[in-house]
Amino acid sequence: MAQINSYLTFNGNCREAMTFYKECLGGELMFQTVGESPLSEKMPTRMKNCIVHATLSREALVLMASDMVGEQGLIQGNSVSLSLHCSSEEEIKECYAKLSAGGTASHPLEENFWGTLFGGLTDKFGNHWIFHYNKK
Image (cartoon, rainbow, N blue to C red; front, side):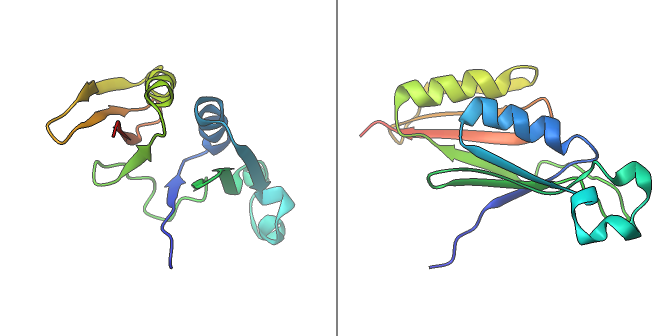
């Protein structure tokens, strides 16, 4: 079956953001810079350290990102959220606390009417996260 993964676009701070997400979520993080890619000779020197592609992976979690912004520039909106389904109450609380550092905890973790622990926040990079843990 096909799988959908989240792909984030940054404007020069992809390495910082993905390193932060690794600290919060764990996993293995890999980067490829413009300077390490075939794009290197076609790009300005100032872009050599920009990230062409980054991948953070841990078990079923795959988060990808890049600094490669299109001509229109980076436009951040609220139409996309990263939904993190946690495997324990301890994990959801830990991830929520770490990802909210420097951001805005808009919806504290709470049990909801459908029987799960649920919450939401916007991290310090402007990305929206939804947290979910099914206690059953």
